[in-house]
Length: 528
Image 1 (cartoon, rainbow, N blue to C red):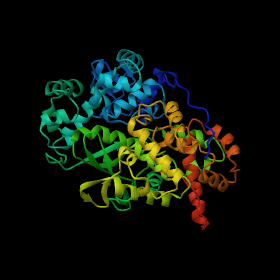
Image 2: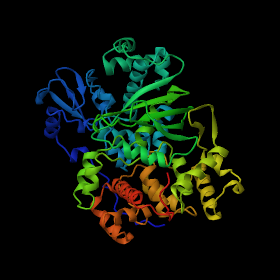
Image 3: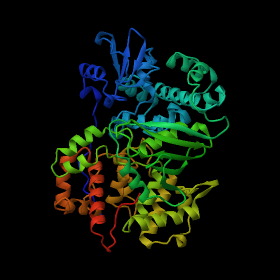
């Protein structure tokens, strides 16, 4: 296994260097949904802020001010538009790939770190002082970590108010607010409504009874999405008892279901793919979440968005890949193809090691056995979901004799789990990718292929290429190109900074080739 690490993304891909205010206004005037979440438009005459695609009458240019985040608009005294709900847009695609301090901080805030550990905890994870962190976030995003977390809490509170019958006090603490007074003040400032009024205005919609049940959500995305590829990819790798792909609630749909280990408890998640008649650019995926503790709602949604790569900019990706005649037919055939992430980087790391030198099916079987022996059973099974995947600490303490795999891979697995359990290696959303890669490579039995795969899926790196991967080589040959790793690595330079997406296109091409010409030879493929 080897992987020639290609050039990394520029460290400063700032929005200010990509579009100016006149371009933003043209996007607002044309109601261009591709920019939803990339910036927000505040209108001085109304005192509200909107997403670019808001259906309301386009304001005059002289009345518009543009902000990079909803928190910045709120901090300037604007309230959220009740018509377009700008707080519920996809996240900016910048946070998919930026590896600098601001990008890492935004990902951690999205995962709920400020709510759980405060600004000091966030700063400690990033290796900066709270003052340095505040200064850099405010300079670039117009809001510090507390303001960004506050905007996120407000959106979670609105969701709970409008989709559950929880008492208002319970909603406040479930959304992450420290007090009911803070909650009331924030809701009034952001939505210009009291919590009770916000709930009453949404009274015609079905709500989850207080005390439990399943929350129905819509996970927003921009552009087109290929849910067929996502569900094929996840279904092929689904660990028995932990995850499954099953027929969906609507005719012709499929749903991905899995268990979630979360900071305050556990949960069950179910996300539906699009139906045959749904437009790929519909704008949302239906999701259902069952949580033992509603404080985990924000974190669960954030992790599901990462799993389905919902904050990506598929237009930018497809345009880049379509510029190469080799990939142009693939990009045209699968518009909106995503690069799946994962809900638990520790779980993914374990499964990546299990997948070394074996088929996807064999690795899935091994993962299922580990889950049965070392995972935690749910209080009650739900369909095929019975287990939480074992923690790194539980596997680090496993009896080596119970691990049915070659001795070298057994050592690699136990060493990796020990490093994850004691914090020697970190894979959380705020980790520095280069540092994490170096720490992983220092572990015995962890090679460049495994590190590249983890960069792509656990650390959301959109520019990973695996030239030695069997699936990549077969995919290139299926397209009539040279599958030699050196030639493949050289060719991949023209696909930057979106090589992770090119990788998925090549894997799909290889799978189609194998389906057309079945072979008995077992090949080593990636395992998630």
